Length: 263
Length: 161
Image (cartoon, rainbow over all chains, first blue to last red; front, side, top):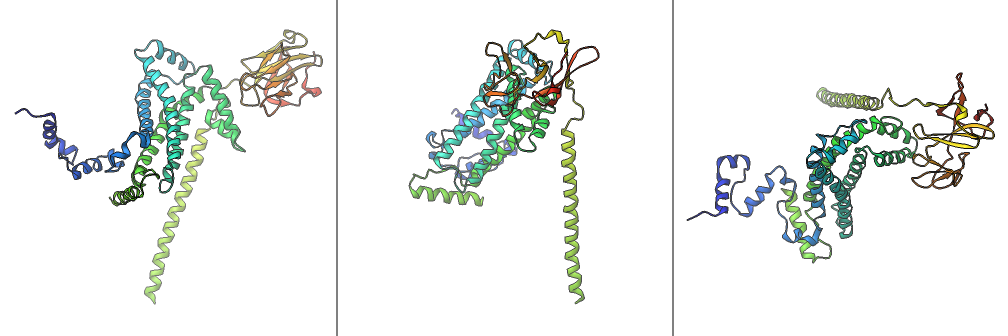
């Protein structure tokens, strides 16, 4: 009798190599499925159990997941773009044009990076509106809202620092205007402006600083806070059950939360 | 009695070392912060000199306003003499332009408008365009120091040839 794909997969999951990597092993019992989540370094950030109703489109519109999706696209397209881009005043603009007209698929990668960046800013705001109007920011989730604000600021800073990198007139004046806004901070404004640009005007130092911020410091900060953000969803009682739902469901949700917390 | 004294000594010694440790770490952290700040502040800037050579005065006809886009200054030849104005908008740093048909200086970014004396006519700019020090060197060239503001319309702020 021919084996089904599932049976092959179950067989694979019983092999010694597989078991050495994923300790939970085969089986679809509730325990095994919970262990598969709990014992995975990435998935253990999330709750081991989620009610399917909470995964319906209407509950969240998947806005947070979509934001993560755009972030992953931005990392995946940004790293290849770095291979052709020199953050130096004489070359930056020419490299941007080369990416568009000379490098194979360069135009596709650059545009994908650009549109994903726009989409990410939009989705972050949409996600925040959804969370706000559902009331999902309220205790015990208030600290995760604060983490969300930090992530909003990081997203906007990533967008702003990336704007300078094409090194064209639009970029130059946008950063001139934006950095002059920083000068408006009382007392230390001019100092912030000087340290941000590495000089008194937008020039080679500013380009290099924005490049390092855009490609290293801000993405690492984003990953750090995203990890906390996801972990806090589990710690704060899982995905938010809407206040308009029957009280029994909410009680059940908080009980699940208590169990999850104990794990 | 003696035992108790010893015990108290032990606790205070531990507290002493905890304080010593925390104190040393705080000093090290403050030093690192100062180090980081100094590192982030460039000591040498490869920026253009603030002093600009604007050429011979006869390049500028009477009652003319001339913008140099590279240095961001106006050289204006008025009845009272030559004077120089910063072309950088005091709002958010955009480069303004001279509009002869309107007889005013206008900023393309957010619509601030200025008289040729630098005084604001309208728009979000919080301050007038500053006057810059201008003088003649030994070769008879007009020099402008962009880093030095001079009082607007003051007698010494003009160069007369």
